[in-house]
Length: 357
Image (cartoon, rainbow, N blue to C red; front, side, top):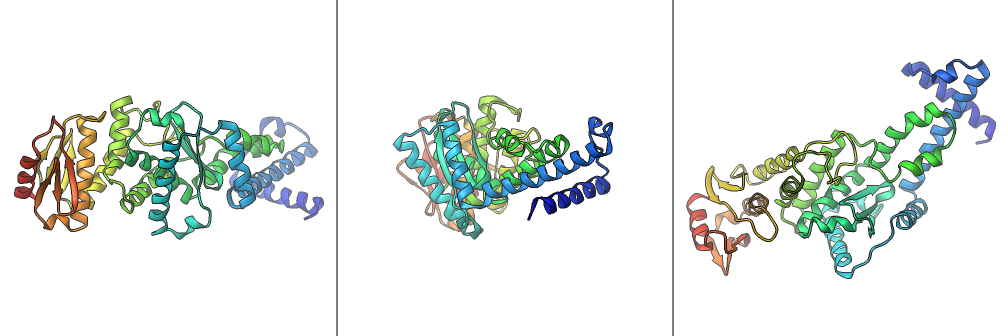
């Protein structure tokens, strides 16, 4: 398209937007002459179109995806430690297979990922299925199942194209109002943030993460457990040091997210299993109150027990009797809890489970 046709198209698009939406021009533009107004409208339309083209380039083309990935690595620095990188490879392999079983489009844009050198507790997914994990995340999480939940949430954003939608939502009005055409600068300043993500997007990513984890080798109880850990360490304030799985100012509280996952675990068990205040119930009868252990609170461990029980009921293991294997209570082929010195004896828990399941 030549420049003249481009400008005519830009005028039409911009005037249409102003007429149909009732968006007012900036005061400085409104006070200017007709030529200035037309120039501003043209500039805004061209800028908006350029913004959309740039987002599409980085989000959907292989060349753009890889260029952005390289830029991310240069901006944040690459952190390498063989055990963490091996774990990250394993998590992405497991989650890709889980997601692929319900959404084959994941294979169209395989995720690029790396651990960066930033100390803050964070991970993010941006355009083009490019993801990065701050090394600071590992200062707070060491359990692979919980780390997988964090990444599953970010992949949920990626599968639903939330980074591109959020970027258009947050940058669009600013670009149109400025009419400066500095689209590349605007994208560069905002491409790394989660601006534009909405509460419905956060809930959608949370709910998808549960589906992904439930189809993976990981304990589905980790979905609720990781949020219990966040609460234990930072409280229920969603705008906490734990920026993970948020990015937007408009997102649910930590307790709301934990409780959403706990409800899903109950549903997964066919209504058999619940948990509250660190106590695990089966058929509304107390089964166990796990002791705090391994850096986890009693409540955090309870959600892991809840996840194991939910999986046992979903997969038909509850038809078998509970028994003890070493220090682990088993229900069929499903481990339920590995007892520590602060827990009830595994024999006591197994006997109780057989009586109430």
